[in-house]
Amino acid sequence: MNRSNLRVVIMGASSGIGAATAIAFAREGADLVLGARGQEGLDDVARRCFEAGGRAETIVVDATDAEAVASFAFEARAILGEIDLWFSNVGAGVVGKYQNVPMEDHRQVIETNLISHMNDAHAVLPIFLEQDHGIWVNMISAGGYVASPYAAAYSASKFGLRGFSEALRAELGKKRRIHVCNVYPTFVDSPGFSHAGNYTGARLSYPPGALAPETVADAIVKLARQPRNSTVLGAPAAAMKLTQLAPDLIASGMNRFLDTWARRADRDHDTVGALYDAPRGASGVHSEPGRLHQPRSQAANKALLAGAAVAVAAIGAQLLRKR
Image 1 (cartoon, one colour):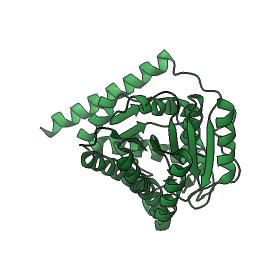
Image 2 (cartoon, one colour; image 1 turned 90 degrees about the horizontal axis):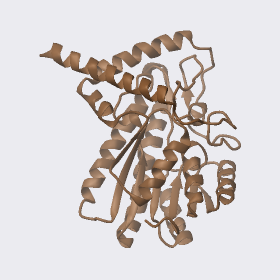
Image 3 (tube, one colour; image 1 turned 30 degrees about the vertical axis):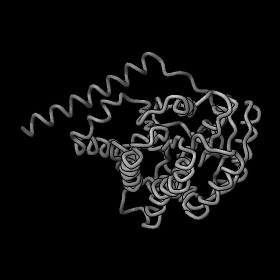
């Protein structure tokens, strides 16, 4: 795609990665249509897009409602003329031991993280096929490769989303100008935890070294010009894929860590977060409003690589024992 005159749709645009991506595209002079459940959050992001040099129309939509998403896509195309890139970014999570989380909350996570993205694809693919071009960017997360204890439904949704996306790419293999791009960031310091359901009894917080939403946004803007099947952010791609060789080892280690964290962290009450209703007001881009993110230091990069090396070594040891 050309740098200018991009026509972009972002679903899940009212906070976090979606908001950061809208602003990043606005700096490119893009025309945007932004969708989410909350009008106040959308209005805040649209204002930021205007200040960044772009134009953004907002539409309140429930991404889990297939008919509503189809109408949203129709309206977005009418506004933009054509759709060059559609970013499926709606996501939710609930944290807690599987049996301690109500089944309806697990179901809502699946509806939000998997079904909503399927709704997006079903709505926009006919448009792409008619245009004979388009880029569908699918926010999956590292959770599409690495199982997440204390977030079983989240893991199910992200593993399923990766499979769905790869199957869709195969179906579109002969359409050279239509691309399916998956994005796999590690932890991102967005309002996501404040929106999550929480049944751990502990206060949720991001680990050190969490990615800035702007880092993910810049990678998505790059996909508009250089589409690629998979983009991994925050960890070496090879190390993340190697975890599949010994998934039980990695998941068990994470579970032990989370058991310890849940006992020692500051206490908090159980909550459904924003699983069922849009957050009140504007949530912004970061977990803490006004927080400034610095590029990851060389020391932090070394620590990340060292951690990846330890994980790979552990996997190798496990495989040798199996022999």
